[in-house]
Length: 122
Length: 258
Image (tube, helix red, strand yellow):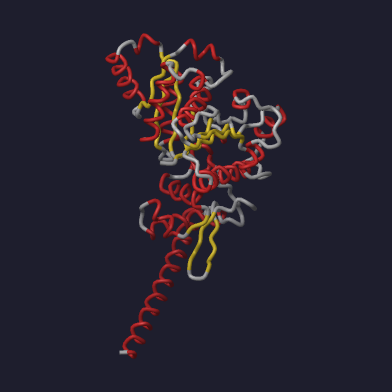
């Protein structure tokens, strides 16, 4: 029984790891798509953007919803944003990464979770 | 349910400040804890109604990150025995402060939005307020759009002036809808003849609902007594039996359920 539990625990760990890697791959693909769409010039280090209300108004509807939700949450994961917007986590992850590429948001990893936030200080 | 309410309009002079103040006073009379804030930094007004001139801290200072919100709020409760409480946050009326606020850049406005959004946690959750009411500046300006984004519901005050109606319609499609805001219309300064009987009032409200395509939360007649008060006192506090006070009671009930 103990040996069975050990094997089961191990396979759960492997599956978790695969899921994590797939998510990271997904995020990277989102970023690549965005760069292809808008070009390298819109990367944050070249064009720091302020996410003020006039900018929020100019965003397409789907990105505005994500951006406003993140403004309210201050710092959140794609999961937390999707809880508020009632859209799928993968969809929100894609939109959040688009907003990062556009320079309106920042992203940082804390352990296994990716957090998104609006940088109001720099 | 706790709410942040932004009172907005397309044009100036529609009665935003009068309605914000009297709505706040009505909630307080009903035992609610309310925070009323003057976010019209270009033309501050609430300091005149609450007769405050020389303060250590204004809302400008809170948005500038100079102080926390508790330093700004002033207790303006009239002892009514219902347990209600009114705190006000005032905009600095000095010319220098107005000039300073009009020269802010996009980065500052982005931080100001963050400070306004933080009020929900500081006042509604930790401070146990029932309502925060933002009295905003008219039209499409940074301070008013920041207030709208931070609010749960928007009350749009409009007169029957054609340009005002047209502007309010445009703001609905180009501002409130884009931020998915729950929006209600307050028609102010209505000619008394339009509201002579219940039947006519119903017909008028239906007509306005069709024009704005939004719920009409109040049709407020143009009362000479309210005009005569000239913003020197809070009308609903001084004249509890006046029909204007009755209209505001009805509005407060609708806003609570909205």
